[in-house]
Length: 314
Image 1: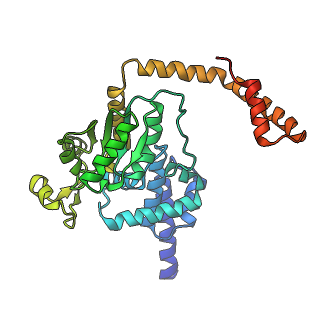
Image 2 (image 1 turned 90 degrees about the horizontal axis):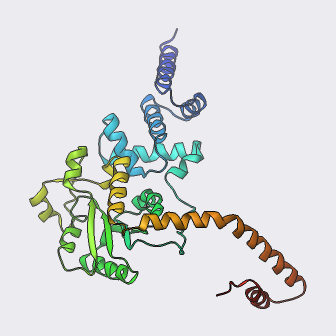
């Protein structure tokens, strides 16, 4: 047996042994990944990604990176993040259904007839907004991504706009870094509404033993930050996803107006009850509109006639 053939057989045995180490993945899934992957370490990373994703409905790429770092002791650096991004790109191509875990192409707007609690959930990163939106919408809490919050002036103007929308309090998610902690300085000033930074805090960093990143010294605020906290910074997405959702849920519930949940439940129940009737009414309106259209009526004439006929009595 030649050395080349012997080496090839050893590589195949190693692959088979690795596939056996992931019993929760189907045989077809493992075979598909193995056929599209060269290198035992790359295959191991991709199988670990698939195994981790089984436990989450929605995730950001940065969160996935931190789950891999925390669970398997991969390096928390830019090089490994790029490797994760590339492997995820390959896996999305192989398994298109994975895209739903990282994207939200069918964002639904909350029913405007439903009550709003007067609070909003703001994020420094748009990817986090996608992650938390589903939870926030359960309580009809609007979400907003204000990337980077550029400056004190920019943030203050955003808060003023929120007050005009009827918001009484903002729950804020930022990294623990020079830019993220800029908000601490802002909220010590007189603000038109209350702003509470719910993550990332030093207590959360210590509790979950989050992996650090080096502070970007190019940031104009780095000098003051390093004097207070040292050379390390931490990202919100380093938090375990379930822990982050728990933090958000707890703070939302704490800040809901008294009786809000009971009222919301009643309105949602009423909406559920009339939904079949709404569908019947829509069908009826469309049929009437088609009849009028055949008679040559214009769109405006059809709308006027339908309004007179179906508008609810006061």
